[in-house]
Amino acid sequence: YELTQPPSVSVSPGQTASITCSGDKLGNKYVCWYQQRPGQSPGLVIYQNSKRPSGIPERFSGSNSGNTATLTISGTQTIDEADYYCQTWDSSTVFGGGTNLTVL
Amino acid sequence: EVQLVESGGGLVQPGGSLRLSCAASGFTFISYSMNWVRQAPGKGLEWISYISSSSRTIYYADSVKGRITISRDNAKNSLYLQMNSLRAEDRAVYYCVRGEGGSYGMDVWGQGTTVTVSS
Image (cartoon, rainbow over all chains, first blue to last red; front, side, top):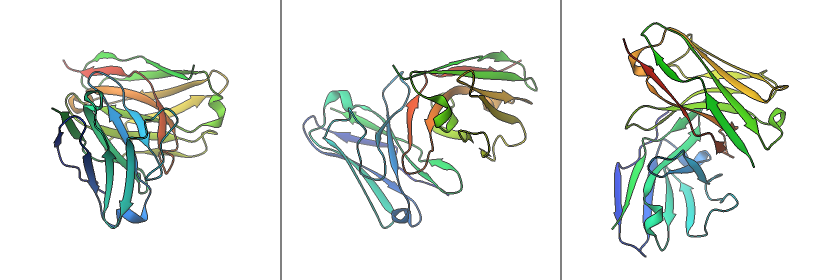
């Protein structure tokens, strides 16, 4: 099973960033999202398509329908500049290739 | 504080072996499934192995199946990864990660330990 993400996304500070993750009938599966800032370990920002773990700001949201899951960051801040990975489960854990979010 | 601390990485020759360890603290280790996830230099995340809380269920990625063994010692709050027949392409940072990997994802990550395979 494969998950496809755009290699890079750019957004201006304060604007909304959308990062997509595509897979066959992905909407029938649960999707999680991870943030990895430069030089750091990844961290979970969204689970079960749209739920935020404790401590994750409300500006992070997620959706999943059809063949595409989307991570949306509203009011993007410079601290949100990072790599983002989607993840699902299909006989085993699968990660997307990652999207580098640039805030400038 | 919930924490995972990996150790055991280093430089190994092609064909060699290495055993990674992960010490868990700050949570009830026996209650959680665990994973190893790796990241090659400049590349994305690759899940490589899963072990259930009781060790009854174990999964491996096809890329490493037959060359690695995951295990855990709940009495010692520790997770292990035995890696054999190492190849240049196994060079990566190896993360110890808590969670099912399913709908709830993997919610706690260690800082990683680096494995380099080179002659």
